[in-house]
Image (tube, rainbow, N blue to C red; front, side, top):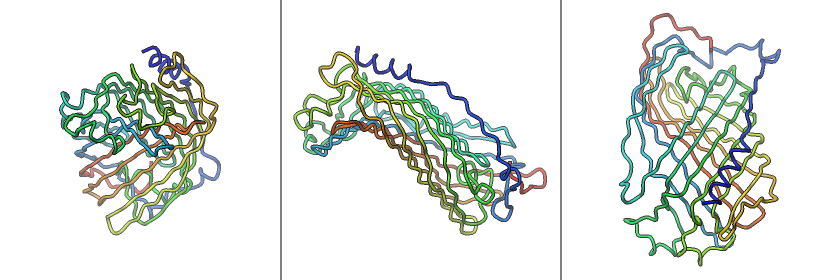
Length: 345
């Protein structure tokens, strides 16, 4: 319990307050959206039905034995309607589709806020996570007989927090729409791609009242992986390439964005009475986006996903990995009350 509170407390102390702004450079101010590539639907009334499914997993990697343990929360997908007009938007996708049986997989209490803003020139991600309660969803095959599928190993005492954000600039914003595939406010009329570059910061922490590795599994895993908790504060550069392939009104978008930065890493192993600091200074993360769908002037539908993975690597042979994301299914319709203009907002 002391270790758990120490890790969470240290990470909150690391949390910085960052405010940033950026003015358009002279060359950007002279550029205009190319209407032969991008069509704007900002003057339409958009109504839709969404289904969201979020994911959030914590994994322990032991490279000596090639073993992986993964904890997942017992959470449900949600769905609901939405409506937007010009700058105003309201999404009511709060109707739960139900979780796994709480008596078998345990109950998860959470607050998971993810904001993904696709603007004309900028891509902004902001998230905040608070989770209590996980179950062991992956473990070494040799330990399979210890955890029958109908009786998973539940850890209601494991907590996880996460904060972060990313800010990226799209170099070909005049011909490539960041909005078309993920918010459908615009339509990409021709295939096009763009490089994006920016920065990120993130905080992650997880701990339990006892060791995260079950006692019966420890003999099969190196002792450097016997984590009672771990956490990191990191900041660095994030960038990569995004491309949308278009055929008539159908589209496919793929984005691969690796990131590199510096980190402050703390952890505790079994038997530790205080949190330790590791001398590791570098870390890596990877963010991916994809979208597949149909986007005509009035009707649109499809699927899109955003995922992010951070490796909390350190000087030992074992480390933690945090992965989270959101999957969206949607169907929408646009109503036009005035002549649509092709300028982008």
